[in-house]
Image 1 (tube, rainbow, N blue to C red):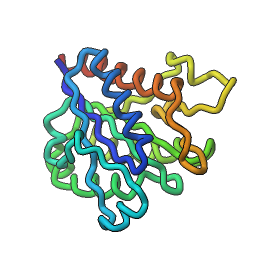
Image 2: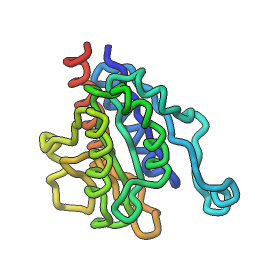
Image 3: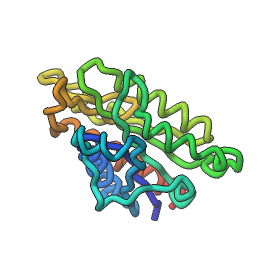
Length: 199
């Protein structure tokens, strides 16, 4: 049975919701799944004053743990078209793994959240893909066989590069069923591929 890590950073809960959907999909795809969060890097006072959400049910990940998994699916908010600073900081701590080639051949995917419809989701996903490729990982996105991402009757995330959600300019929108469905689909797809490769 393939082991999948859903690894995320979420300030206001949007990416956390998507992470849980990815995990549901990966379980449906036959994998053993862990959900872990990347450590916060901003001062505690700022976390409290900004109302950042921290889910203690999801333990903080350590980069050394990445070698325990066959597939790693990473969730990040978008910051000016890039991955969040907390996500970048976490992966900056994987230099030793890179030197050892410890993640070569593992599967990888990414999902993201941005405040607007054209706020850089795809740019951030591609930035995450570059990190994966430097580690020699095999990138898996969200295929168009998830047909809902082609619907145009409402504003919704979705990208062949990975599942996405749109939080809105006030961050008040929650992931809708199309977006959560994309996350579940991507998680299941990655788990099934991992089962074929590592099962």
